[in-house]
Every structure is written in structure tokens, then in C-alpha cells.
Image (cartoon, rainbow, N blue to C red; front, top):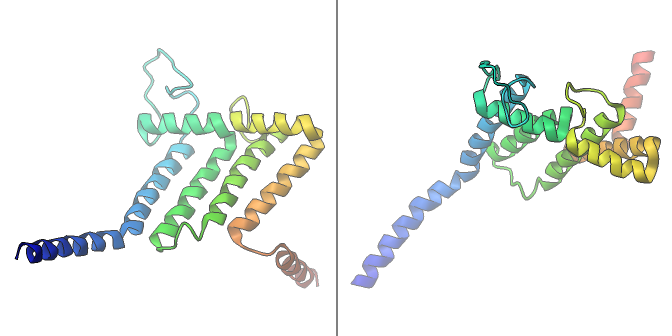
Length: 196
């Protein structure tokens, strides 16, 4: 009798938790989508003069970041590390939230996430190589400066730029899951149709 009671009780708990686990990707997806929104508003309202870990002023200025103190610190950290490439993190979180909300397996989409990582790292180095795109000292942030210095030591400036643009293209192809040949073929046919 006791065995029957515990077996039924345990099976009821398993059914209720399996219903919760059924929606775990969607629950996590909503959390990631909220993180996307917070990061988006944090980065678009980034002000290097807001009090954060990387800038402090004794003036009692109101923080102008739309997401408050947390947003000022998060955006300052991302801009310090990646420079202007930190805006690609918004795309990363957006894509991840779409995967989770559509119940796509992250295990099946790991190639796209690796591609996004490549885009972030190579774009930071590209921004540093061209010294464009940011109001901070290092346009590619610390990571871009580090990547450029390593690549420059091996390939000099031109080789570094060629390598980083190539890796950026590979990352873009991984995210888009498009064949380079079919992309170029389609681009060529559209160009010919427009020029006629």
C-alpha cells in the first residue's frame, strides 16, 4: 500500500514538473529577450561621462543612461572591452532569444552563435585597425587592441585587415547559413538586371 502511494505521488510530481520543463526554452527566451531590451537601451543611451566603473566624477550628475546605474555600468564595461563592436551583442541576444522563443535547440544553432562571436571579435579588431567608430580611446576596446597587436605582430597592418575581414565574412556566412557562391551568383544576377 505504501509503495502504491509513493509511486502515484511521485508520478504526479513528475507530470507537473515535465509540464514546466516543456516551456523552459520559452521561459528562458523571455528572460533573454528582456536582457536584449535592457542591453539595447543601455547601449544606445551610453554616455562616457556617466558615473560607472570606468568614469567617476564628484559632481552630482544625474545618470543619463535610460537603464540607470546598471545600464551605465554594463554599457561602460562592454564599450571598454569591445568598443563599437559592443553593439553586436544586441544582435547576439536577439538571435538567442528568437531561438529560444521558437523552441529551436541551441545545440543545433551553435554554429550561428560561434559566427556571432567571430563577428564581435573580428569587428572589434577591424574598428581598431581603422581607428574608427567610437568616442573612446580605443575604438575596438581592449579586446580589439589586443587582437590587433597580436595580428599586427604576425601580419602587419594589411595582413591583419585582410585576415579580420575574411573572418568577419566567415562569421556572417555562419550566422546567415548562406553559401558564398550562391550569394555572389545572386548578387551578380541582380546587378546585371539593374544595370540593363
